[in-house]
Picture 1 (tube, rainbow, N blue to C red):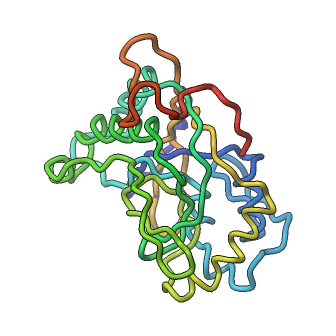
Picture 2 (spheres, rainbow, N blue to C red):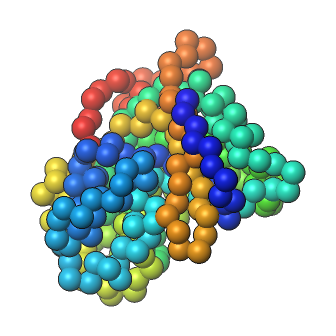
Length: 257
């Protein structure tokens, strides 16, 4: 478990997956923006942007990096603190084994383009559910969120929008790519993004830890506050809706991002 202590107050918090800094998603970031905005590293200006209007398309990547949203940003409830969230994530991680995601595909959330798993993932579903349950008490809107039911990671095949983009819900696990754009713009740039994904050999990802990030606001760069490594547990092993014997990614396959 790693924690970064700091004196900067955070406007909001999120629980995420950070891909490998030297893997395909990092290379994809360089292709798209000319930058490698990994939250745990300095910016890398080593490449030219893939698209001429990258500055307008990928502002959020520069702030947050390429991150997989396990729990969307939330405001801390009065009387709670980030250390309590970190302890809760440690407890989740202790009973969750690492796993591989299915391959990523380009998807449309209704307001921006993202990467999303192309198949159901029981491990992601279990992780999302546990993180949601354990962090609800620290969310200023936790009771309201819980009363509506925490939406776990699901995959129903999705609906295809123009341009062959699968539509995913913003509450499902995904890796945001662009800032909010029009559907027409999304359709126009989708072939370029798919080409970049192919060039870097993007497949799935290995989830070995869950990370708490904080947004200080004001357009400043988000910060990694804590990382909890997933471990093996002989009891209380989570199973997703795939059920025993199904092809879900608990097996320790090595997938290089």
